[in-house]
Length: 319
Image 1 (cartoon, rainbow, N blue to C red):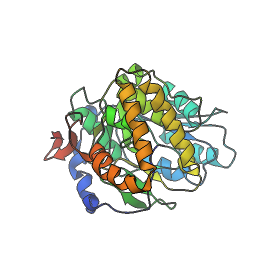
Image 2 (cartoon, one colour):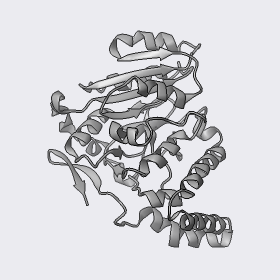
Image 3 (cartoon, rainbow, N blue to C red):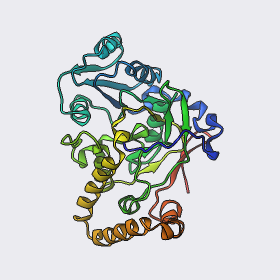
Image 4 (cartoon, one colour):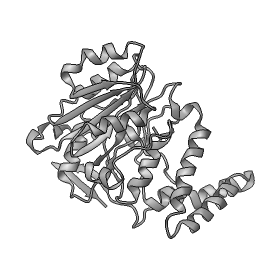
């Protein structure tokens, strides 16, 4: 999970939540929707896993392959999984090397055209998978990787955060802008997964979703979708917030390795060093943010793929 979730707030662009989830998506014909392979990695998450499973099953997505990969839970998680085993595609429970190892095991047992994962503490929004399936159905093949609006749940599972939709390009991402891609709202075509190596980096217990995004950017643009797909549950045990500085250091390692391998990496590395220096000087920080970083985050450019938005009866590019 790479999203750094700030204090709960509803963005000015997202006050009318119903407008973000097109109501007539329910009319999608099952035969036209791609098969989605969704994996949930879990270890000792009895407190939350049932809400996660229920949020997936409540989608009623007609072409879903849902697999749960458990790392050998001992807290009652397996009893909850067994409760739903007749309604899911499959599950396993065995010791693993962490979440990313579990994801590798789960994805290896799936075959859907579209892929994604939802962790055992997080949830999907109502109609989220219909958004994903219909976007990949309606959009041309070059749309291989999508993400929805960043959203969050509180510990009880209430939606308490809906943010404006960021935009991404590879060079801005590597330069340090919009580094948080919300995994719970992100899905991709299997063809992209295969070109990027067909694996998660299981050598670490944190940050390997960020490393996957770095590899995806080598092959495809990330298209933002103006809709609600999934959300991150804010809870104190989350790996990504227990030691945020360590997460950032891991991200920086991945970026540095990528910059060392690309032709324009030296220039971006120099920019990152200058940016770090400027932001460490109190009297300069504000001017640097306003004049350099804000445009990097928000200034439209040809490197941004178009927004995907629902218009009238289908998903279309919004330029």
